[in-house]
Image (tube, rainbow, N blue to C red; front, side, top):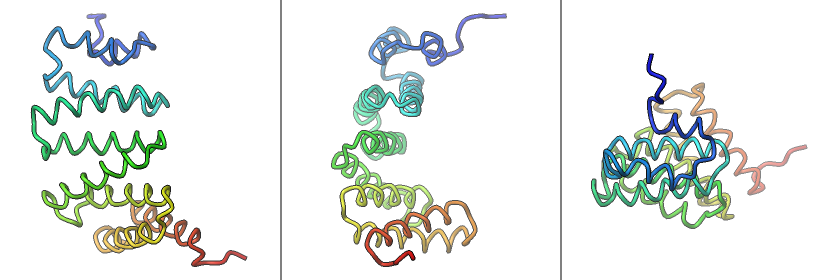
Length: 184
C-alpha cells in the first residue's frame, strides 16, 4: 500500500500549518501553477481554510487562483465566475463588503447572460448580494432582491423546499429590520 498522500491538500492537512504560499510554491514545480489540477487544489484548500476560519489565507489563495484563471480562461469562464463567487463569500466574511459586492454584481451579470435570470446559481448569487446589501444598510434594495429570489424559488422549487424556506427567512429578517412587522 502506498503511504504517499494522494494530493497536495492531503499533505497540507497532515502538515497543518503550511502557509498557502509554500503550498503553491511546491505545486509550481510540476505540473505548474497554471495546470487545472493545481488551480483546483488551490481552490479546495482555500475553501478548507475559509471553513477553518483562516480567512486571510483563503482570500490569498482565491485571489491568486482567480488571477491565473482570468488570464488563462477569460473573465466569463464558469470556473472564473465560480471562483469569484467563492472569493466574494470570503470577502464578506472578512467584512470587506464593498469588494464582495463588486464581485457579486459581476457574478450575477455573467450568470444572467450565460444561464438566465432564474437559474439556481443566479438566484444564489442574488441572495448573496442581498446579504451584502443588508450588511451595508441598503435594506430596501436588499428586500426587493430577496422578494424576487423568494418568488422564483417558490415557482421553481415549491414553498416547502429548503432553499425557498431560507429565502423566506432572509426576507422576513430584512423586513423586520425595516420595521415592516412588529413583534409583540
